[in-house]
Image 1 (cartoon, helix red, strand yellow):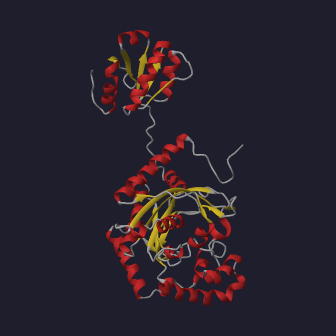
Image 2 (cartoon, one colour):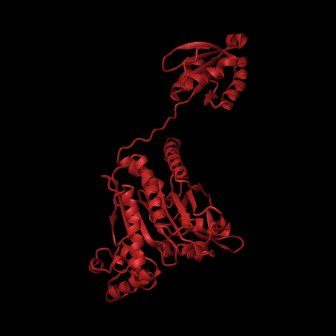
Image 3 (cartoon, helix red, strand yellow):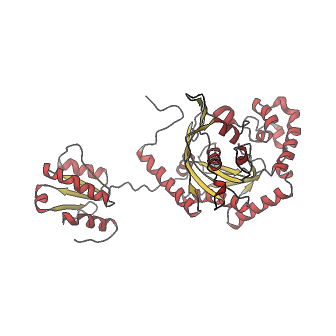
Length: 427
Protein backbone atom coordinates (compact mmCIF):
# COMPACT_ATOMS: atom_id res chain seq x y z
CA UNK A 1 0.00 0.00 0.00
CA UNK A 2 1.32 3.42 -0.95
CA UNK A 3 0.09 6.98 -0.60
CA UNK A 4 -2.06 8.10 -3.58
CA UNK A 5 -0.23 9.69 -6.50
CA UNK A 6 0.36 13.37 -5.87
CA UNK A 7 0.37 13.05 -2.08
CA UNK A 8 3.20 12.62 0.42
CA UNK A 9 3.57 11.69 4.07
CA UNK A 10 5.12 14.36 6.27
CA UNK A 11 7.25 12.30 8.66
CA UNK A 12 8.19 13.44 12.19
CA UNK A 13 11.63 14.77 11.24
CA UNK A 14 9.99 16.94 8.54
CA UNK A 15 6.96 17.86 10.64
CA UNK A 16 9.15 19.78 13.11
CA UNK A 17 10.18 22.04 10.22
CA UNK A 18 6.54 22.58 9.28
CA UNK A 19 5.71 23.44 12.89
CA UNK A 20 8.52 25.99 13.05
CA UNK A 21 7.40 27.67 9.81
CA UNK A 22 3.73 27.67 10.82
CA UNK A 23 4.52 29.12 14.24
CA UNK A 24 6.50 31.91 12.55
CA UNK A 25 3.51 32.65 10.32
CA UNK A 26 1.14 32.70 13.30
CA UNK A 27 3.44 35.08 15.17
CA UNK A 28 3.59 37.46 12.20
CA UNK A 29 -0.20 37.33 11.73
CA UNK A 30 -0.64 38.18 15.40
CA UNK A 31 1.59 41.23 15.00
CA UNK A 32 -0.47 42.34 12.00
CA UNK A 33 -3.68 41.74 14.02
CA UNK A 34 -5.05 38.89 11.88
CA UNK A 35 -7.25 36.12 13.30
CA UNK A 36 -7.30 32.45 12.29
CA UNK A 37 -10.29 30.94 10.47
CA UNK A 38 -10.86 27.24 9.74
CA UNK A 39 -13.30 26.24 7.02
CA UNK A 40 -14.50 22.77 5.92
CA UNK A 41 -12.35 20.53 3.77
CA UNK A 42 -15.14 20.38 1.16
CA UNK A 43 -17.80 22.82 0.02
CA UNK A 44 -20.84 22.80 -2.24
CA UNK A 45 -19.40 22.79 -5.76
CA UNK A 46 -21.20 26.04 -6.56
CA UNK A 47 -18.98 27.89 -4.07
CA UNK A 48 -15.97 27.30 -6.29
CA UNK A 49 -17.81 27.59 -9.61
CA UNK A 50 -18.95 31.06 -8.59
CA UNK A 51 -16.08 31.98 -6.29
CA UNK A 52 -13.18 30.87 -8.49
CA UNK A 53 -14.85 31.27 -11.89
CA UNK A 54 -16.11 28.86 -14.54
CA UNK A 55 -13.43 29.95 -17.01
CA UNK A 56 -10.49 29.02 -14.75
CA UNK A 57 -8.39 25.87 -15.14
CA UNK A 58 -9.11 25.04 -11.51
CA UNK A 59 -12.86 24.72 -12.11
CA UNK A 60 -12.67 23.29 -15.60
CA UNK A 61 -9.92 20.71 -15.10
CA UNK A 62 -8.55 20.33 -11.59
CA UNK A 63 -11.33 20.00 -9.02
CA UNK A 64 -12.07 16.82 -7.08
CA UNK A 65 -15.87 16.84 -7.32
CA UNK A 66 -18.21 14.09 -6.14
CA UNK A 67 -21.87 13.49 -5.38
CA UNK A 68 -22.79 12.57 -1.82
CA UNK A 69 -25.54 10.12 -0.84
CA UNK A 70 -28.07 12.92 -0.83
CA UNK A 71 -27.32 13.77 -4.45
CA UNK A 72 -25.50 17.01 -3.59
CA UNK A 73 -22.45 18.00 -5.63
CA UNK A 74 -19.49 18.60 -3.31
CA UNK A 75 -15.89 19.56 -4.07
CA UNK A 76 -12.67 19.16 -2.11
CA UNK A 77 -11.31 22.65 -1.51
CA UNK A 78 -8.96 23.62 -4.42
CA UNK A 79 -8.13 27.10 -3.00
CA UNK A 80 -8.83 29.09 0.14
CA UNK A 81 -10.38 32.42 -0.81
CA UNK A 82 -13.82 31.23 -1.90
CA UNK A 83 -14.31 29.20 1.30
CA UNK A 84 -13.29 32.12 3.51
CA UNK A 85 -15.58 34.54 1.67
CA UNK A 86 -18.46 32.02 1.84
CA UNK A 87 -17.95 31.83 5.61
CA UNK A 88 -17.70 35.62 5.84
CA UNK A 89 -21.09 35.92 4.12
CA UNK A 90 -22.80 33.03 5.92
CA UNK A 91 -21.84 34.29 9.39
CA UNK A 92 -22.53 37.93 8.52
CA UNK A 93 -19.05 39.05 9.48
CA UNK A 94 -19.68 42.14 7.38
CA UNK A 95 -21.80 43.27 10.33
CA UNK A 96 -18.97 43.02 12.85
CA UNK A 97 -18.28 46.36 14.57
CA UNK A 98 -14.56 45.95 13.90
CA UNK A 99 -13.80 46.41 10.21
CA UNK A 100 -12.05 45.35 8.10
CA UNK A 101 -12.12 41.65 9.01
CA UNK A 102 -8.55 40.30 8.84
CA UNK A 103 -8.25 36.52 8.62
CA UNK A 104 -5.58 33.88 8.04
CA UNK A 105 -5.73 30.13 7.51
CA UNK A 106 -3.69 26.96 7.14
CA UNK A 107 -5.40 24.43 4.91
CA UNK A 108 -4.78 21.47 2.61
CA UNK A 109 -5.95 22.06 -0.96
CA UNK A 110 -6.75 19.46 -3.61
CA UNK A 111 -6.12 19.87 -7.33
CA UNK A 112 -6.03 17.13 -9.96
CA UNK A 113 -2.94 18.04 -11.97
CA UNK A 114 0.26 16.37 -13.07
CA UNK A 115 2.39 15.93 -9.92
CA UNK A 116 5.86 17.45 -9.96
CA UNK A 117 8.29 18.81 -7.44
CA UNK A 118 6.56 21.55 -5.46
CA UNK A 119 3.18 20.93 -7.10
CA UNK A 120 1.21 18.03 -5.66
CA UNK A 121 -2.42 16.97 -5.82
CA UNK A 122 -2.73 17.65 -2.12
CA UNK A 123 -0.93 20.88 -1.35
CA UNK A 124 -0.77 22.80 1.90
CA UNK A 125 -1.40 26.50 1.87
CA UNK A 126 -1.09 29.46 4.20
CA UNK A 127 -3.26 32.39 3.23
CA UNK A 128 -4.72 35.65 4.44
CA UNK A 129 -7.84 37.57 3.47
CA UNK A 130 -8.87 41.14 4.40
CA UNK A 131 -12.55 41.93 3.83
CA UNK A 132 -14.22 45.27 4.28
CA UNK A 133 -11.76 47.93 3.11
CA UNK A 134 -10.89 49.41 -0.28
CA UNK A 135 -7.97 51.41 1.12
CA UNK A 136 -4.82 50.85 -1.01
CA UNK A 137 -2.88 50.82 2.28
CA UNK A 138 -4.49 47.43 2.96
CA UNK A 139 -3.10 46.10 -0.31
CA UNK A 140 0.37 47.20 0.74
CA UNK A 141 -0.08 45.71 4.21
CA UNK A 142 -1.06 42.31 2.80
CA UNK A 143 1.98 42.32 0.48
CA UNK A 144 4.16 43.41 3.40
CA UNK A 145 2.89 40.50 5.53
CA UNK A 146 3.71 37.99 2.79
CA UNK A 147 7.18 39.43 2.29
CA UNK A 148 7.77 39.45 6.06
CA UNK A 149 7.10 35.71 6.27
CA UNK A 150 9.80 34.95 3.72
CA UNK A 151 12.30 37.49 4.99
CA UNK A 152 11.97 36.54 8.67
CA UNK A 153 12.57 32.92 7.74
CA UNK A 154 15.81 34.04 6.09
CA UNK A 155 15.01 34.07 2.36
CA UNK A 156 16.90 36.70 0.39
CA UNK A 157 16.56 35.70 -3.28
CA UNK A 158 13.08 37.15 -3.63
CA UNK A 159 11.37 39.15 -6.35
CA UNK A 160 8.03 40.91 -5.90
CA UNK A 161 6.00 41.46 -9.09
CA UNK A 162 2.93 43.70 -9.02
CA UNK A 163 0.33 44.83 -11.53
CA UNK A 164 -3.03 46.55 -11.61
CA UNK A 165 -5.99 44.87 -13.27
CA UNK A 166 -8.02 48.07 -12.83
CA UNK A 167 -11.65 48.52 -11.87
CA UNK A 168 -14.57 47.10 -13.87
CA UNK A 169 -14.53 49.96 -16.39
CA UNK A 170 -10.79 49.58 -16.98
CA UNK A 171 -11.05 45.81 -17.26
CA UNK A 172 -13.87 46.00 -19.78
CA UNK A 173 -11.86 48.41 -21.92
CA UNK A 174 -8.83 46.12 -21.74
CA UNK A 175 -10.98 43.06 -22.38
CA UNK A 176 -12.30 44.48 -25.63
CA UNK A 177 -8.79 45.46 -26.70
CA UNK A 178 -7.58 41.89 -26.07
CA UNK A 179 -10.48 40.42 -28.06
CA UNK A 180 -9.75 42.75 -30.96
CA UNK A 181 -6.03 41.93 -30.77
CA UNK A 182 -6.20 38.13 -30.52
CA UNK A 183 -9.23 37.43 -32.72
CA UNK A 184 -7.22 37.45 -35.98
CA UNK A 185 -4.96 34.75 -34.46
CA UNK A 186 -7.77 32.64 -33.00
CA UNK A 187 -7.06 29.60 -35.16
CA UNK A 188 -3.38 29.68 -34.11
CA UNK A 189 -4.12 29.62 -30.38
CA UNK A 190 -4.45 26.51 -28.21
CA UNK A 191 -7.92 25.16 -27.48
CA UNK A 192 -7.93 26.67 -24.00
CA UNK A 193 -7.11 30.15 -25.31
CA UNK A 194 -9.83 29.92 -27.94
CA UNK A 195 -12.29 29.42 -25.11
CA UNK A 196 -10.64 32.14 -23.02
CA UNK A 197 -10.97 34.59 -25.91
CA UNK A 198 -14.72 34.46 -25.38
CA UNK A 199 -14.93 33.90 -21.62
CA UNK A 200 -11.94 35.68 -20.08
CA UNK A 201 -9.37 36.93 -22.62
CA UNK A 202 -7.16 38.30 -19.82
CA UNK A 203 -6.16 34.72 -19.02
CA UNK A 204 -4.62 34.31 -22.49
CA UNK A 205 -1.70 36.37 -21.17
CA UNK A 206 -1.05 33.65 -18.57
CA UNK A 207 -1.09 30.74 -21.02
CA UNK A 208 1.91 28.41 -20.82
CA UNK A 209 1.24 26.87 -24.26
CA UNK A 210 1.00 30.08 -26.28
CA UNK A 211 3.53 32.16 -24.36
CA UNK A 212 5.91 32.23 -27.35
CA UNK A 213 3.25 33.21 -29.89
CA UNK A 214 4.26 36.49 -31.64
CA UNK A 215 0.89 38.04 -30.72
CA UNK A 216 1.88 37.92 -27.05
CA UNK A 217 4.71 40.41 -27.53
CA UNK A 218 2.54 43.34 -28.51
CA UNK A 219 -0.67 42.39 -26.68
CA UNK A 220 -2.53 45.41 -25.25
CA UNK A 221 -1.33 46.31 -21.76
CA UNK A 222 -3.84 46.78 -18.97
CA UNK A 223 -1.75 49.74 -17.81
CA UNK A 224 -2.73 51.57 -21.01
CA UNK A 225 -6.41 51.06 -20.21
CA UNK A 226 -6.52 52.14 -16.57
CA UNK A 227 -8.93 55.00 -15.93
CA UNK A 228 -7.97 57.89 -13.66
CA UNK A 229 -9.25 56.21 -10.49
CA UNK A 230 -7.42 52.93 -11.19
CA UNK A 231 -4.20 54.74 -12.04
CA UNK A 232 -4.40 56.73 -8.79
CA UNK A 233 -5.12 53.57 -6.79
CA UNK A 234 -2.12 51.75 -8.25
CA UNK A 235 0.16 54.72 -7.63
CA UNK A 236 -0.88 54.79 -3.97
CA UNK A 237 -0.13 51.08 -3.56
CA UNK A 238 3.32 51.56 -5.11
CA UNK A 239 3.96 54.57 -2.89
CA UNK A 240 3.10 52.65 0.28
CA UNK A 241 5.42 49.81 -0.73
CA UNK A 242 8.20 52.32 -1.37
CA UNK A 243 7.63 53.93 2.04
CA UNK A 244 8.03 50.48 3.65
CA UNK A 245 11.26 49.87 1.75
CA UNK A 246 9.82 46.98 -0.26
CA UNK A 247 11.36 46.59 -3.72
CA UNK A 248 9.04 45.61 -6.56
CA UNK A 249 8.78 45.32 -10.32
CA UNK A 250 5.69 46.15 -12.39
CA UNK A 251 4.73 43.45 -14.89
CA UNK A 252 1.77 44.40 -17.09
CA UNK A 253 1.28 40.74 -18.08
CA UNK A 254 0.77 39.51 -14.53
CA UNK A 255 -2.77 38.15 -14.17
CA UNK A 256 -4.44 36.02 -11.54
CA UNK A 257 -6.52 32.86 -11.99
CA UNK A 258 -9.69 34.11 -10.30
CA UNK A 259 -12.21 35.70 -12.63
CA UNK A 260 -13.07 38.37 -10.09
CA UNK A 261 -9.65 39.83 -9.35
CA UNK A 262 -9.32 43.56 -9.93
CA UNK A 263 -6.94 46.38 -9.06
CA UNK A 264 -3.81 45.06 -7.29
CA UNK A 265 -2.36 41.70 -8.33
CA UNK A 266 0.99 40.41 -7.13
CA UNK A 267 3.31 37.42 -7.05
CA UNK A 268 6.42 36.70 -5.00
CA UNK A 269 9.06 34.60 -6.73
CA UNK A 270 12.27 32.86 -5.73
CA UNK A 271 15.38 33.67 -7.73
CA UNK A 272 17.51 31.17 -5.81
CA UNK A 273 19.82 29.09 -7.97
CA UNK A 274 18.55 25.57 -8.41
CA UNK A 275 15.06 26.32 -7.13
CA UNK A 276 13.41 25.03 -10.28
CA UNK A 277 11.40 26.19 -13.27
CA UNK A 278 8.27 27.09 -11.30
CA UNK A 279 9.52 30.09 -9.36
CA UNK A 280 6.29 31.47 -7.87
CA UNK A 281 6.13 31.21 -4.08
CA UNK A 282 2.94 33.20 -3.41
CA UNK A 283 0.27 35.04 -5.33
CA UNK A 284 -2.66 37.22 -4.51
CA UNK A 285 -4.67 40.28 -5.27
CA UNK A 286 -7.85 42.27 -4.79
CA UNK A 287 -11.26 40.77 -5.54
CA UNK A 288 -13.87 43.47 -5.03
CA UNK A 289 -16.74 41.54 -6.64
CA UNK A 290 -16.35 38.16 -5.01
CA UNK A 291 -18.46 38.70 -1.89
CA UNK A 292 -21.50 39.70 -3.94
CA UNK A 293 -20.98 36.68 -6.19
CA UNK A 294 -21.37 34.45 -3.13
CA UNK A 295 -24.55 36.13 -1.96
CA UNK A 296 -23.19 38.82 0.35
CA UNK A 297 -23.31 42.61 0.29
CA UNK A 298 -20.82 44.64 -1.69
CA UNK A 299 -17.58 44.14 0.25
CA UNK A 300 -14.06 44.79 -1.03
CA UNK A 301 -11.46 42.10 -0.34
CA UNK A 302 -7.82 41.26 -0.87
CA UNK A 303 -5.68 38.25 0.02
CA UNK A 304 -2.95 35.83 -0.98
CA UNK A 305 -2.09 32.17 -0.80
CA UNK A 306 1.38 30.67 -0.38
CA UNK A 307 2.32 27.02 -0.63
CA UNK A 308 4.17 25.72 2.41
CA UNK A 309 5.88 22.98 0.38
CA UNK A 310 7.31 25.57 -1.99
CA UNK A 311 8.44 27.72 0.94
CA UNK A 312 10.37 24.77 2.38
CA UNK A 313 11.90 24.15 -1.06
CA UNK A 314 13.04 27.79 -1.22
CA UNK A 315 14.61 27.53 2.23
CA UNK A 316 16.47 24.41 1.10
CA UNK A 317 17.61 26.13 -2.13
CA UNK A 318 19.14 28.96 -0.08
CA UNK A 319 20.69 26.48 2.39
CA UNK A 320 18.72 27.90 5.32
CA UNK A 321 18.61 25.51 8.26
CA UNK A 322 15.38 25.48 10.23
CA UNK A 323 16.16 25.32 13.96
CA UNK A 324 14.55 22.20 15.32
CA UNK A 325 15.03 21.72 19.07
CA UNK A 326 13.94 18.11 19.41
CA UNK A 327 16.19 17.29 22.37
CA UNK A 328 14.30 15.57 25.17
CA UNK A 329 14.20 17.29 28.57
CA UNK A 330 14.32 14.13 30.69
CA UNK A 331 14.50 10.39 30.28
CA UNK A 332 13.57 8.29 33.30
CA UNK A 333 15.45 5.05 33.94
CA UNK A 334 13.63 2.71 36.31
CA UNK A 335 15.29 -0.41 37.72
CA UNK A 336 13.07 -2.97 39.43
CA UNK A 337 9.34 -3.46 39.76
CA UNK A 338 8.95 -1.05 42.68
CA UNK A 339 10.80 1.71 40.82
CA UNK A 340 8.76 0.97 37.72
CA UNK A 341 5.56 1.53 39.67
CA UNK A 342 6.88 4.74 41.30
CA UNK A 343 7.99 6.14 37.95
CA UNK A 344 4.39 6.28 36.70
CA UNK A 345 3.38 9.05 39.12
CA UNK A 346 6.72 10.87 38.84
CA UNK A 347 6.48 11.02 35.04
CA UNK A 348 2.88 12.24 35.28
CA UNK A 349 3.82 14.97 37.77
CA UNK A 350 6.77 16.11 35.65
CA UNK A 351 4.56 16.42 32.56
CA UNK A 352 1.86 18.28 34.49
CA UNK A 353 4.54 20.81 35.41
CA UNK A 354 5.58 21.49 31.83
CA UNK A 355 8.59 19.16 31.68
CA UNK A 356 9.05 16.92 28.64
CA UNK A 357 9.83 13.37 29.73
CA UNK A 358 9.84 9.84 28.32
CA UNK A 359 10.81 6.39 29.56
CA UNK A 360 11.52 2.86 28.38
CA UNK A 361 8.54 0.69 27.41
CA UNK A 362 10.49 -2.31 26.13
CA UNK A 363 11.58 -3.87 29.44
CA UNK A 364 15.23 -3.18 28.64
CA UNK A 365 18.10 -3.32 31.10
CA UNK A 366 19.67 -0.21 32.62
CA UNK A 367 22.49 0.05 30.05
CA UNK A 368 20.05 -0.18 27.14
CA UNK A 369 17.86 2.47 28.75
CA UNK A 370 20.83 4.85 28.92
CA UNK A 371 21.47 4.21 25.22
CA UNK A 372 17.84 5.14 24.53
CA UNK A 373 18.34 8.39 26.48
CA UNK A 374 21.35 9.16 24.24
CA UNK A 375 19.32 8.53 21.08
CA UNK A 376 16.66 10.95 22.31
CA UNK A 377 19.42 13.45 23.21
CA UNK A 378 17.99 13.75 26.70
CA UNK A 379 19.31 16.69 28.70
CA UNK A 380 18.81 14.85 32.00
CA UNK A 381 18.45 11.21 33.01
CA UNK A 382 16.46 10.50 36.16
CA UNK A 383 17.40 7.19 37.79
CA UNK A 384 15.08 5.33 40.13
CA UNK A 385 16.06 2.05 41.79
CA UNK A 386 15.15 0.21 44.98
CA UNK A 387 17.57 2.20 47.15
CA UNK A 388 16.30 5.51 45.74
CA UNK A 389 12.71 4.49 46.46
CA UNK A 390 13.59 3.63 50.06
CA UNK A 391 15.37 6.96 50.60
CA UNK A 392 12.79 8.96 48.56
CA UNK A 393 15.55 10.26 46.31
CA UNK A 394 16.09 10.55 42.56
CA UNK A 395 19.52 10.36 40.94
CA UNK A 396 19.68 13.15 38.36
CA UNK A 397 22.43 12.99 35.73
CA UNK A 398 23.09 16.01 33.53
CA UNK A 399 24.13 14.43 30.24
CA UNK A 400 26.14 17.35 28.85
CA UNK A 401 28.46 17.62 31.84
CA UNK A 402 28.17 14.13 33.31
CA UNK A 403 27.40 15.63 36.75
CA UNK A 404 25.14 13.49 38.90
CA UNK A 405 23.23 14.51 42.03
CA UNK A 406 20.79 12.93 44.42
CA UNK A 407 17.68 15.11 44.68
CA UNK A 408 14.84 14.57 47.18
CA UNK A 409 11.82 13.18 45.34
CA UNK A 410 9.58 16.08 46.37
CA UNK A 411 12.13 18.59 45.04
CA UNK A 412 13.01 17.01 41.69
CA UNK A 413 10.39 19.00 39.72
CA UNK A 414 11.65 22.33 41.06
CA UNK A 415 15.25 21.26 40.46
CA UNK A 416 14.65 20.26 36.82
CA UNK A 417 12.63 23.40 36.15
CA UNK A 418 15.45 25.51 37.48
CA UNK A 419 18.07 23.75 35.36
CA UNK A 420 15.98 23.94 32.20
CA UNK A 421 15.39 27.67 32.68
CA UNK A 422 19.13 28.25 32.94
CA UNK A 423 19.33 28.43 36.71
CA UNK A 424 21.99 26.86 38.90
CA UNK A 425 19.71 24.98 41.23
CA UNK A 426 21.74 23.22 43.93
CA UNK A 427 18.94 21.75 46.01
